[in-house]
Amino acid sequence: MGLLSKKDSKLILDPLADNNPITIQVLGICSALAITAQLKASIVMALSVIFVLGVGNVVISLMRNIIPPKIRIIVQLIVVAALVIIVDQVLKAYAYELSKELSVFIGLIITNCIIMGRFEAFALANNPWRSFLDGIGNAAGYGLILIIVGFFRELLGSGTLLGIRVLGDPIAKTGLYSIGYENNGFMLLSPMALIIVGLIIWVQRSRNKELIEEN
Amino acid sequence: MAKYTDKNSYTILFTIIMVVVVGSLLAGVAQGLRSKIKLNERYEKQQNILYAMGVHDNEGEGDVEFISTDKVEAEFGIYIKKQLVFQGDEVTENKDAYLIDLKKEETLAKDGVYQRRLPLFVGEKDGETYYVIPMRGKGLWDAIWGFVALDKDYTVKGVFFDHKGETPGLGAEIKQRFFMDDFSGEKIMDGDSFKGIAVAKGNNDPVNKIKDDYEVDALAGATITGDGVTAMIKKDLRMYLPYLKTLNE
Figure (cartoon, rainbow over the protein chains, first blue to last red):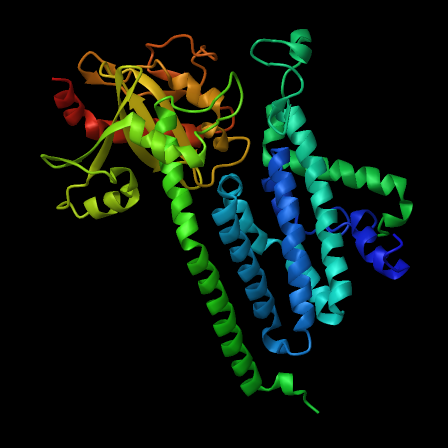
């Protein structure tokens, strides 16, 4: 990344792997379980969180010297809520189909712990540019896990990807289904997302021993 | 050496300014986009009603394709011949009946005095008359609603379902074609007695070849949403029965 200094690019790249908000910090698990039954929902949720966290971090960072410390959490909450409502309204006006598809997820962004976490831990203490990079990086790290989980859940649970049948037709018994393959209905249930996240954590830590906590 | 941001007076001032700024910002955004959102909702209702009648851009197997928004207003005018509103014993025609808010009507009717208005859309396609009935019920998380198009023999010609917040991949699948298409051809009446259509598990009919069992195959993992669909069809179609009978005579 020639555009960014080494320190800055670390802000974006770290949360993608070695400091991933989901697999390392174990934040934002709730939505990772709830909305990853389909790949499309995962992708859109990832994009929405990238927007909200990127802009939100900048707003909080700009206000960091004037926010009264006593009520800073409420102030952060208001910023997230306002951004989320704006996103929701704009989608309803200009991308109605998409907004229907997302329905409750957009509202759920408000409750995403990663967002409040980054406001509190980073944006309150850093300048807007660095906060912006940190926001994008963390949201992308979150989104990456969401997309991986969504990919496996939709593929193994429904035999589709983005709604397209990639393994053949389960009713007409074509493709893989002709040799006795069955969709795994368990994959559609939320707890399976936890198991996939667990597997990702396992793979990640066995490749990089430094990530293993000692105790 | 307390900083000025620690003072109570500053905190209160900050709160007030923040609330006013954010409040007016959101009010401004909502106001600015309102007409556009209203128009989208209007088109959507027209698309849904036409979809139940089988007027859509579906191609082969696959996704639900509505009539596009730039054409829907005109098509709606062509296919929907009459919009009736039943209220008690009264029958009126109303060009905006499709905009009647079923949720509001249901709430108003709870006092036991108010007679709720029941909209019915009379459509015509390929020389056949369709009666499109709107429905509204509860899924697992939130509201579900839809339209069912019947012919004069009470055979379902098509349905449309939608939901506010059912689980993606599970209950949310009620708006997929493979689920909605199953309803076509089902009957809701057994002679003179009303049966409705049940979303049933394990009816040994996954591709829904049997059309006179008043059942369609359920979605795996979406029991409560499916039960909600069953209940919605039973409850809302029942209200229309007396009127449907008079229309046929």
